Image (cartoon, rainbow, N blue to C red; front, side):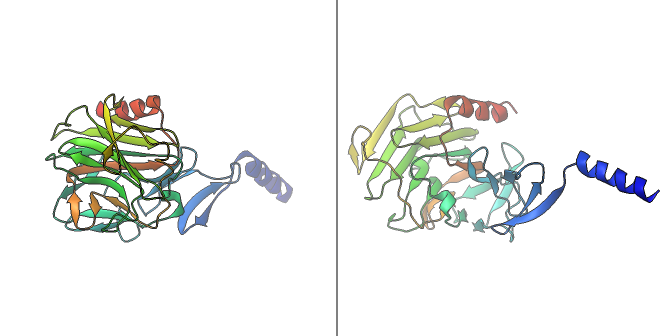
Length: 268
């Protein structure tokens, strides 16, 4: 009888993989002995990391940023209905989210910033996702923002502090509607998408001067600045509206992926 029980236990051990929890940078991750690791993790800290998809930081903003999260929320924030679940409302009264700097956020040679926004008003120079916190912009690396009222822009600042602006000329985005914004870059190009479609008309400024895309616009500088959501710097250039599903990738999303991500939620 004892031999039979031991045999059954061995069969069960062979037939099923064993999961265990390990600690990676303070986050509990479930590992499977049959697989090397689970690539997507979202514990109690509200921040997603998915190595397979290239996600270095993702925030669904489903009321899951609390004292356990590395992302700190400032101001009198409100959780409201989002494009998917809940989202965070910013009303220019000092609300923003700050994710501390980490090596994963230093997207120098390539990267993608993806976000859903629901603007209440189209104001000028409003920060949406901004890497850097210094008031003089000395630690700015990349920034998805408004450049003029309702005009989407992406800024990349290199190690020589040369700032290159890529600005959509396709008109103002409508207020009180959801919009999907994506900016991606590598060492040769900047790609800007609005609502699943590539921007077809753009203006480029290098250090304030109208130009072609400079050959040395990248890499983005490796700075110590944190990642701000909802503002460019802590005290000004704030977004007015709702922000949802912020994702940063260490790779360039291609046009098909951007279109697929947009269509997956726009049809809801």
